[in-house]
Image (cartoon, rainbow, N blue to C red; front, side):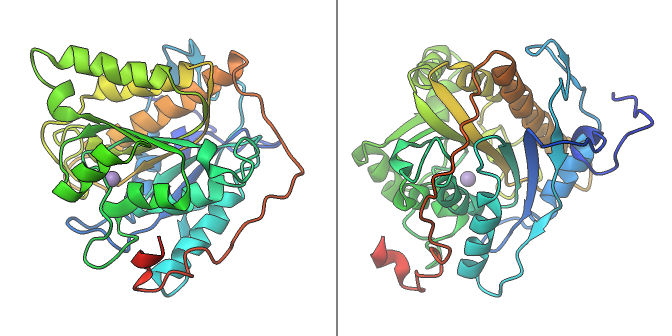
Length: 341
Ligand SMILES: [Mn+2]
């Protein structure tokens, strides 16, 4: 347990005190929940995760030292959408997220339901490593669900469509693992869309043959190159680890598989992970395991990003080149917007 130093900052990521100077890492809470289908409470999740992070050890074995390890990590105020409609909120969120895609900063977004992903991907267009061409960007996703529906309950921006909409927005590739709940429509998309590579939990978690399937997933991560956004839906983990998330599902990844995914991805010398999010965090009230698991993995993401900086694999690419950005991107799709993708 953390010993709570005198300069402990209540509610901040890892309890780290405010530091002066330009930030290296921004932890950005997004209290967004408009389409969650089953459980509720994804709105309070980001703050619960921040509070739980105070109990996470600052020492990381890979890093070999305590966080913040010479970096300036800032915790941003909780973003809450003000706009009256879902589509306007998505545009608001994209504009907010865009301010963190400077090229110097590493943003870690805390959600909120998985519906945050398409606006984050739209915003990532502005990152200098992407330079307006989202086809360069790969999304690496841990999730129980494929999130590849074309719509759910007539809503094309549902959390159940987070991955399909992100591809439609323009992301070049999608690698997903932990997947074990999907519809026939989603399976057809997995099989026919060559941008998608899916590792199924039924294969990777098999008691006898799972190790081989898991190694194949790690090999996919090792073969990647270019800019990557890492999206961690905590329901990708086994439901026992995250009982309060919106839709906990048995048969999922264990904790160390999530850690190994993070470590393998960030260690790839041909990849630059430009941003990440941890989503579907719900504040558990009869215990803290859900938000603590999320906080541990958020810390792993930050520690592995810091390690990439220490090892010279984070070459900040600031650019003055103005990337055209549509600030009314999501608003242009009406209720029948599905046909426009
Ligand atoms: Mn999801």
